[in-house]
Length: 291
Image (cartoon, rainbow, N blue to C red; front, side, top):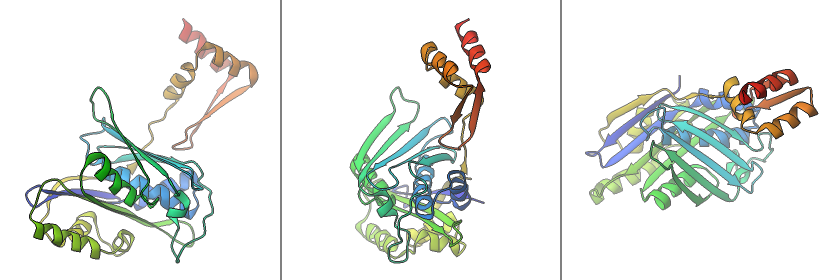
C-alpha cells in the first residue's frame, strides 16, 4: 500500500515529507501505456505532486505541476490535492530514449524547458510561479523551484524503478525543507545525511517506509509526525463534466459537431476514459441548455 508521512524536526525549523508511490506510478504507467523512461519521468512528477500536495490543507486545495520541455517527452502535467489524490499525463508516453550508464535517462527524455507551478489554496487568485528546468531530472527542478520562487532551501529526492518487464517495482520520494535559521552544526549534520542517503528506489526496494526514509534523510534526528495519508490515483472526470465542457463550446461549434459526424468522442487526457455522444444526444443536450 502506498503511504505518505509528514514530520517536523528541530522544533519545527525543519519540515520533511516522504512517500512510497509504487502502486500509484504503476497505475499511471498502465493507463498511459508509457515506456519505461516516460513512466519514470511521469512517476517522478506524480510523486513530487504528492509531496507538494501534502503542504496543502485539504482536498479542496490543489497544486498543478506542468513541465513544458524541448525533449522527446514534450510535456508532463500533474494535479494533486491536500489528501494525497493525484493524476497526470504526458505529451509523448511512448518515447524510446536509450539508457545512460545503465539507468533510465529521464534527463534526456525531458531536456530543457520550464516548470510551472500553480497552487490553489482558496485565495482570490491562485499562486503561480515559473522557473527554468534546472536539469530535467525532476527532483532537482522542484528543489530549484522552491529556492527561486518561494525562497525555501529544500532537498528533493525522487525515484522510479522499472523492471525489465516494464512494470514499476518501486517508486517514492522525499522533501526536506529548512524553514528558519537554525544552528550551523545542525545544518551540516542534515546536509551530510542527505548526501549519504541511498536512492529512494533502493530504500523502497529494501522495505523502508516514509518515516524510515525521513529518519535516514535527516541523520537520525527525532521526528514528530504531523500528517499521514495514502497517496492514490484519482481522476474526477465524469459524464456531467464532459457535458458541461461540450456546452461551453457554444451553440455554433456544437451544431458543427452534430452535423459533421454521427458520434462525438471525448477522451480524458488524465485517465484515458472515453465518453461517446450520438447526434441525438448532442442535439437534446443543446436544446435543454437553450431552454
